[in-house]
Length: 293
Image 1 (tube, rainbow, N blue to C red):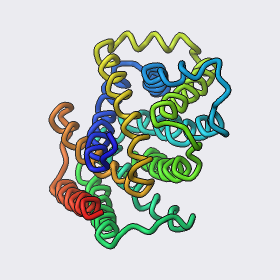
Image 2 (image 1 turned 120 degrees about the vertical axis):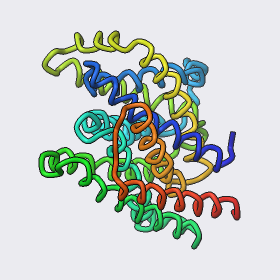
Image 3 (image 1 turned 180 degrees about the vertical axis):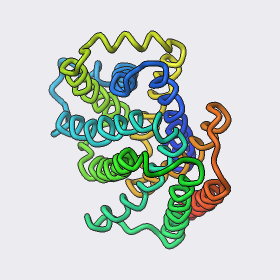
Image 4 (image 1 turned 90 degrees about the vertical axis):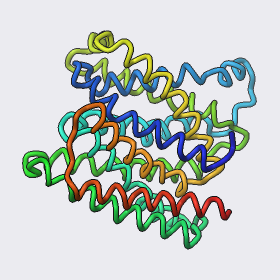
């Protein structure tokens, strides 16, 4: 599939489902780093067929594995660790809201890098979505005391920064001749190696990995969804570009908010829902801009 609008919606929905599933896993005793490792290794192995076909050949694109390492670290390891560590403390919906800030960060970095400027309608969509995101973040104070969570909120605000850096890097450094599936697989495999090393030198070491047995069905579902998510993500990167791709944050935030309420019993006030509605309007502008293209 190489159509930007379906890819945006598919990737955004799957992104939004990651937050509540991660929260359930962490609350069931799975450390955030282990859940992140499960997603990385599962996606890397599940999408590895193109890599297997290249084994024994010498036609690897130049800089392929360097790209995979940097992409995995910036786009996967660091933000996902922050997501799953913050979700039990801030709520799956509120952590999902941090992804709504990535389009503005990505736009700023893309303009600084001299990349193509989005159309007026696309810029309007980003601006409207950002206004909605600000209202959503402000709405957090309606349901919980903010002071007790200031540190975790500050750490969660690094999520959109890492995502923006990853969006720009993947677009600028895409190895010539490399496909979306093999890059998705390689990036996740290198992420899994980094996470495994971190688990090995942590307090409980590799014994933490067995905690995944606490949620076997949830883990299996997450592996399948992660494979589809990363394949769609890299395909969207290629056909849509970094700024358009970053707007999966808006879709993901709306899905995470709904999933948190429906599945996890999270509750939010009127300000939060007002912000969510404005975010959806921004998504509509984004889709309209892509349809005009």
